[in-house]
Every structure is written in structure tokens, then in C-alpha cells.
Length: 366
Ligand code: ATP
Image 1 (cartoon, rainbow, N blue to C red):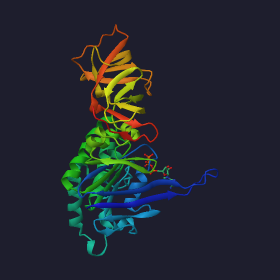
Image 2: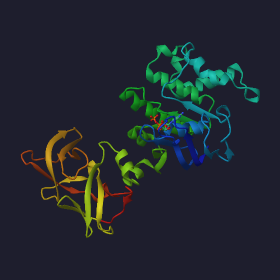
Image 3: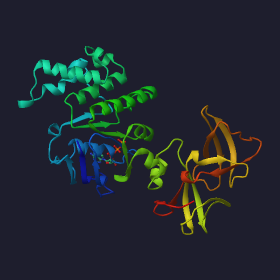
Image 4: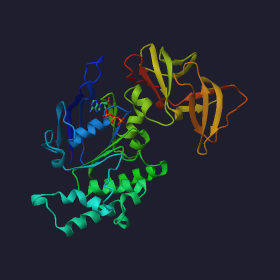
């Protein structure tokens, strides 16, 4: 099911006596979510992710704008008539009911032509349980399950009616690191198997990048960029997006473009053709540094962390806006710890320039 958001805006009245303006939780959001895809809604706390999800679910009414499921305008449709499945961070299972009864619950309220026989309901409940691999837990109560198992029950309950759209709001936040990894892979598998259009809210960029077909990066209610995870990582639209994606995070410097060369401090670190002379923000991904004896970029070496798969070189530079500069290089490199200065060359496609005022990315040719 394709989901279309058309100039979607949600304002909340300000409760602050000194600040009377409304809170604009979602600001003019337009996007066509293609059928059968998994979309990651990503951004820092308070950026409007949950509000967007609640608008799609119908739990909230937009201040303006429209929502379509396929050709159908669902803007004024109550949540129960939208054909959605919802999973929240706190699974909200009924503690006194068994797993099976929890999964059956949404089916028992069906009325009229949708009403199912007991046998049909059981069959559907077992199908959903099988999908999330909890068939053997059907007779247990939620209190007798691990966090990950409870979350799977919540997903089965959301899937049992085969919703048109599946909405997941931080579904993995309550799980420990290993279980998060496993469960996010499962969500991906389930989504691929069912082909249900799925919108997944998270503030964890790695989580969103790893399982989404497309990510939507939001800030202060405004969409910053929409695209395939790799595309957004490789071509961030602005400084915010560049900073938000990537672990370890991108290194940010103040730099100067002068006669087609990029300077960081005194060092002419890269050719940047087609950019007017100006002061810029420079973003360099940790993997954008190459250890070079005669490299143009000088930093003060702090420490070298051997991570097993690669080496993290931690240094400082006066022009850096972060306390340290972090470079990730291969283990075949040897860093001379006796030398107080470390010198790098740069990989041009891992270096981004941003306008000093607008913070939009500036394209260049190397
Ligand atoms: P988090 O990751 O912390 O859940 P979020 O990105 O999901 O954050 P939202 O919950 O959508 O953010 O909130 C967006 C903005 O709208 C925030 O500034 C929040 O304070 C505000 N907001 C949300 N719900 C209401 C409400 N009912 N009344 C007033 N303001 C609200």
C-alpha cells in the first residue's frame, strides 16, 4: 500500500506563558512512501517522528495537509478503519492474557462481514506467531517472556489482521544491544516476507540505516533529506544530516576556500574546483583520512586505538569543531607514536563542504 503525505503539518498549542507561538511538531511534510517498502523515520528527540507516525495512524489529526493510502484519502478516517498495525516501544501487552489471547485480541473485535470463526482466528494467530517465531510460547503470559519475546508478540499482534501499513515506534528501545541487532534483522525479514509497507521510527541512525529501504531525516519538524541510506550517507544535503549519520561521527572543521583549494588552518588539504572563495564548514568522514608521511593535513597525535578490524587515530587540530579528530585506517598502517604530528591525505568523496550560514552542502570537483 502506497502512503502519500501531502503538506502534512501538525501544530500543538504552546503551554508556555512566555512563549505563545504554537509548537510546530511536523512542518509541511510531503512524501510518497512506495508500496511494500520499509521507511526509517530518523532524527533527534523532539524532531517530530512520533507525531508523524501518529498522524499516519490516525491517533492525531493534522492541522493541515492530507494523508492517502493508495488513492483513498484517510485524513479523516479513525485509526480502527485505516487498516494499520501499530507497535510501540512499551509493548503494552495484556498481562493477564496468554500470548495467544493477546494475538487473537484484534481479531475478536471484528464486526459484520469481517467477523471470523474461532477456527479462522486461531489459524491467523498461529500464522502471525509463526512469522515472528513464537509458536511454542502461545500458552505463556507476557510476564513469563523475555523482552525480545514480548516485543515479538507485540509485532505478531500488529500483524495478525494483515494491516495495510505497519507502524513501528522505537520498537527496539527496551531491548539490550544483542537483542536489538537480532530483532531488527527479524523485522526486516518479516517485512520482506509480508511486503507490508512499514514505517519505522528510531533515533538510532545505525538501526535506521541498516534495515530501511529509504530513510527520512527530520529536524525540528522539518524533513531534511529523504533517500536510500547509502545515498544520504554519501551525499548529505546539509551539515545536520552529515553530523547525524555515521559512527564514529563525521569530523567538522572550519576551513577556507581560496583559489580552488581548500585550506584547513595553514594546510592546503584538497583541490575544490568550482567553489567561490569563502569560509566553509568542512566535514571529513573518519574513513576519509589516509595516513601519509608527506600528507598535506597535519594534526597533533593523541592516541591510537586498535579496534581489531581497523585502527582509530585520535588527534587534535585547531580548526576542528570537535574536541578530537577521529580517523579510521586499516590495520596494515603503522602510526609512529614518537612523532607528535600525524599527517593525512584525504579521500575527496569523503570530504564535504557546507555553506557557513545556510549549512547547505556545496558541491565541488576535485
Ligand atoms: P522522541 O524521539 O523524543 O520520541 P519525536 O521525534 O518522536 O521525539 P515528537 O514526539 O513527535 O518527537 O514531538 C515533536 C515536538 O512536538 C516536540 O517538541 C514535542 O514537545 C511536541 N509535542 C508532541 N506532542 C505534543 C502535545 N500533545 N502537546 C504539545 N506539544 C507536543
